Image 1 (cartoon, rainbow, N blue to C red):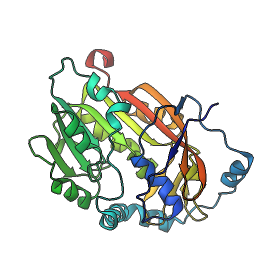
Image 2 (tube, helix red, strand yellow; image 1 turned 90 degrees about the horizontal axis):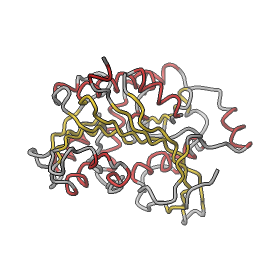
Image 3 (cartoon, helix red, strand yellow; image 1 turned 60 degrees about the vertical axis):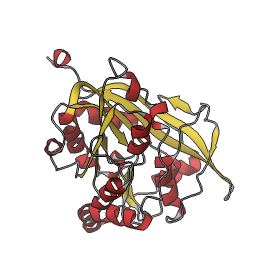
Image 4 (spheres, rainbow, N blue to C red; image 1 turned 180 degrees about the vertical axis):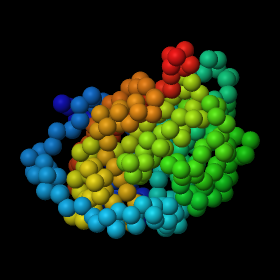
Length: 305
């Protein structure tokens, strides 16, 4: 299986320890030509398999409950520390997900998009600049992140509605009309949610998605290098880890993701691993990265009947 072409690390991450840089920084990496899309995941080396196999000790139930209870606070503190400086703008989004333009029936059709987990707007503002016929609903778990979105000079209530929301319990329909959204983006978001609550988040999103609408998903894949760099005492469950700042990250297999979306009634369009090598020239590192990039659709009424 061929690996992708190499790609350099962005240099603007200064606040997190190395293993956390790897787990978060790819939220801002562009997708480059030559990376490998494949239906099969990355094969571990013998050393890596031994390392993962030795991770049997999980954190205590008390810590698990504490992390869940403090999840919003930990993300709010993340944005307090980093403000709008941590992630680069995602100008690659329209290149990678052609549905953001191709799903229109005619060129001037107004497209309604929901970015679930918008952070400080690194995806929505490039989209709003690039496409004048788009309206964006943007929500995030962190109230501080939403404040940063609203303070952005590009924020315009006529074209964007940002609001705080816990995807796992707050009814999305209080801010977004039911069945009104053409495209939902879930980009490095679902991995931050406890696996037991992921289905609740997808059900919430599905209610505001139009029949025939698309969910665009990109997140950390199973056996990504960041997963292998977590230290002892970081494992919360199968493929689920906590960073030193209390934020959490799940690493997806395509089988788990497919089942999760199927249980929500969303049908797969594509579901592939993306493999590439990332180079940190300063540290002389060349590491294998694994992401899962997928598209799901909500069946039309005729399909679901």
